Structures are given as C-alpha cells and as structure tokens.
Length: 139
Image (tube, rainbow, N blue to C red; front, side, top):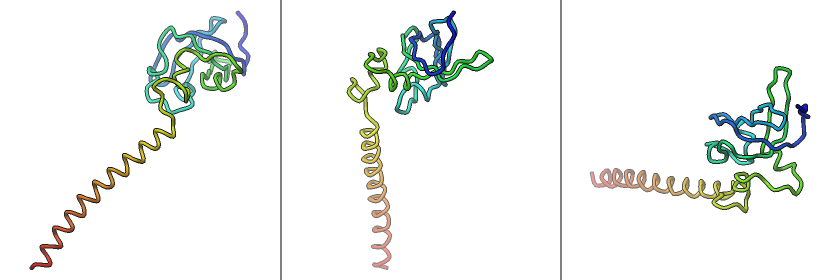
C-alpha cells in the first residue's frame, strides 16, 4: 500500500453515499470522505444528483489524520487538474454541461420569481387598501 500525499490527485471509486458526503475507495485500499461541500463548485442539495455508488472520480487529498481519516475533494481535483478529463458525472456540473443551470441563471430566476411574488402581494395589498379606502370615502 502506498501512502497518501496531501495535495495529490488520485482516482477512486464511490463506495457509499450519505446526506453529508461520499466515501471513496482510494488506490492504496484506504477509504476517504468527500464532504458534500467538496463535491461541486455550486451548492449541492442532494449529493445523489452528482454521484452514485461505483462511480470513478478524481479526488484531491486534503488531509490525512493520524486516526486514519482521509479528507477528499472532487471540486478541487477538477479545478487543479490540468487537461485531464473530468469524471463522468462531474462534467454535468460545468457551465457547458447538459442540463446544468449556472449560478447566474439560478440567481436570475430567483430574482424574477421574487419580483413576481412581490407584485402579486402588492396587488393583493393595494386591492384590500383601495377597497377599504373607497368605502371610507363614501361613509
């Protein structure tokens, strides 16, 4: 078994998925954890949308603790990798990927929906105020 070097990028296999991250079997036989915050550059609500068991992924080794815990990152491996192809599911997270919505697009959609909701609230509030005022003026 080879020792793990912090900062190196290796290929591993997803062996388990939890709500907080994914367990990756590394080439030396050890298992490391990719925390959900280290899966993609964008917010990950459901890790299962990005990874499945038996997926091969490139990971960057972030830490190797004395107690055997290995911290890993997929997003940093992708950002640090020079010219190497991204893992199958990772390519779906890029701006040019299929079915991917960029942060800017999500923000624009959020702003549009928020403005529409505020307009609806204003209409309802104005209708109630206008209705109440008109009755008061005729009293």
